[in-house]
Image 1: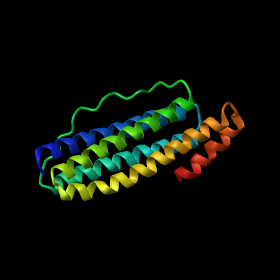
Image 2: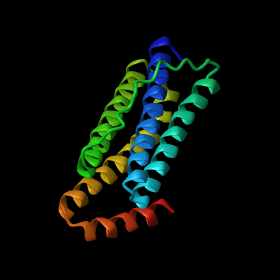
Image 3: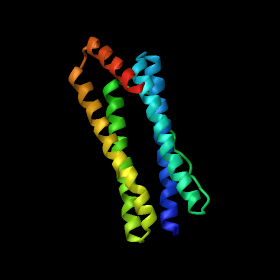
Length: 162
């Protein structure tokens, strides 16, 4: 693995860990509202993002390199509305997709076939993540200020969270 790919993958671990912390911050917000279904769902999302970071971590180690994670930025923790939160999550997932695509393009450019193949899983995963984010934003917009609908939606999030 060359230095460009190595740096990009370490940077992506940082992004995945940031995502995990961001979703934990959002989960804490929902725990205090309280909307337990959304809290559980975002906790699951945080766990999933951590798992993504660990996939890249293991891949770097499998390539006989040592992981070097850059400093992780502070995440927001105060939010003005539920819609704002879901729009933030959607925008963040789009950024993650962009970062993954950049590394994928770099792997092609650098003829790093192993990394190219490795990243295909992440590209497929991001399609699902962006779809879920869009669906969530659409549902929150659809229910508007209807508190009863919000409680029903929260129950749906609890079912999705398992």
